[in-house]
Image (cartoon, rainbow, N blue to C red; front, side, top):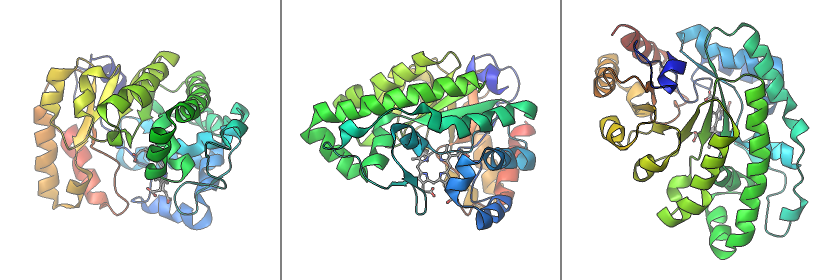
Length: 315
Ligand code: CP3
């Protein structure tokens, strides 16, 4: 169903997976995290594969997404990553040390090994992913404000920086495709902070390059994508700030979304009725993938997720 929906050819119920489906709302994940650091989980193939499978085993989602992070490409640019309080680099990238970034794609081997392990016995499609250069840059320079300030004061060197991230990322998604992922999700989570003119320079051309770099389907995510829906050259993930029905009038590409992650904290009858209302908006649409508007939150009740999945399965 997931792959058919990505071809606009799904005749059955909509497939469902959730952004950040492998994570802290799962007790089995929290238990593993007591023993291992986040870095250990991302870079140890057996552990990353185990975490990837947790939400599939528990809820039976229709697609698995590699358990990793958009910032892992730092390592393939010679930067060292620390995840103790969210992704941080030992040294932030600045215009003056930019020339020191060197491509080392072999550093991404652990994530590719995870994909190989998963492909052996996974019963559902496997989604690979990457960050788009602007969003990844915000984590490599020490925050959104610093990235925007660099972009506006020294646009040429900032673009060179994004090019370096893009080179590493294209190699990474091509490695993922070789390991037989079925789709790539591209996260430009912070691109909503760009002006429309900046979006056309610092986001869209890279998205186009990434989409062209692989032959499997791609899905694009950013917050508040609505002004750009008609320009996105692949499937679009829509957050709760926009209506799927309106989005459908603006693009022929598959659409994914868009139940608010906050609604999962509501009583179960509300979860059910809001899920039904998203399903109703996209009824019989052959290119629709059910998802949240953005990532599932850490303390989400498991019952809400069971209710969501059951509601979709029972239509
Ligand atoms: O969806 C999945 O289940 C796959 C795993 C996944 C992670 N990160 C694991 C993770 C995915 C798809 C991501 C993408 C990611 N990472 C994005 C884009 C999506 C989005 O939400 O906009 C971004 C911006 C990041 C950067 C990032 N990683 C931040 C800001 C943080 C710290 C904040 C937080 O949520 O904890 C992370 C850490 C991270 N990445 C965790 C997980 C499961 C936290 C886990 C933990 O602390 O145990």
